[in-house]
Length: 431
Image (cartoon, rainbow, N blue to C red; front, side, top):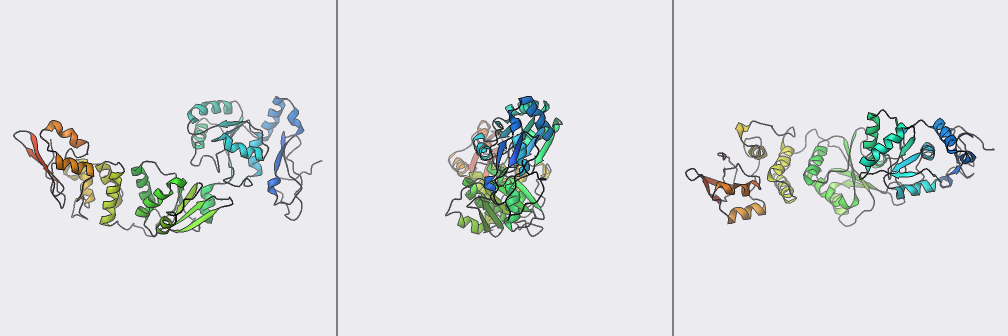
């Protein structure tokens, strides 16, 4: 006969771990090898004799154990021993387990001898799966959702399913477990009083830099998930926005044999990881900004940012807007005003310090494609203006020292395009 213990009873690490059973009426039970408590690798699940009963009787006993609903089950982020008794009980009792990668999750279930059926649920099939899962939940089934690692719903498709269930009044039950961002934060050595979890950054360079700029001004610790092949890109952009002296922590392979916490500045990180490519998903933490106001970037930094954004495919107006937002006091552009000038002109003037004395000399250069276009071609009529519009400069008539367009009023044609060099002034606009 199995010795029964309350789930919260403490076990001595010096004595053998007793056999453990939840109830003789539960279809599946947890048993342990009578070894020391530290031998958790011996943990396994065995089938209860009642599993030979008809399926409807098994379902009745299952329903006595757990109420129907969606269970978000935290699973190990690397070490298979990092799973709770409750998580194993839910996985063993559910009608179905949803997972991102059934092959990956199958290893965990096999390790603990869990026979519950697996169903794939990921970003490529979530729209097809949602209604099927919702029907099963409304029929009274117990559905467990797990991610490839950690807590589901954090930077994975589980968020959408949880939102759907909440909107349909289906119970959503959290089963706490490992989470990479909390594990990394607790051991980072950075402030834990306040933190912002950003997750994965957008793929588009403009959106990505805008998000980094917003994080750079926050006093709270910033936490990012970064794939290993994008680490160099993250460090390069991070150094230009956060500054080389801002402290950061790079956590990788957490809970595994090769676990590493690298600590230093952005400048040091760029040098360190330029000579070695880390493996495994990365959690990067950045200390919050110490001062209330970010140090304004230098003229060279702003020009380099503008050049880089355009080289990465941003339009001139979008690039100017992104850099302008970084230099403004409230990170916002005015929606109107500026004496009725076109929006692109407003953006350029903002770059000059809110329509005042220039903060720096803007654009003594132009993107290569525009520069070669200007040097080699003369606009002869308004019909050819669309060729200018693709460069996002349709309304600028006179920009001395950068670009000069002279309008011949009598012939209604543009007479010439010429280059010069110093500061920006807007005289009029084409009607």
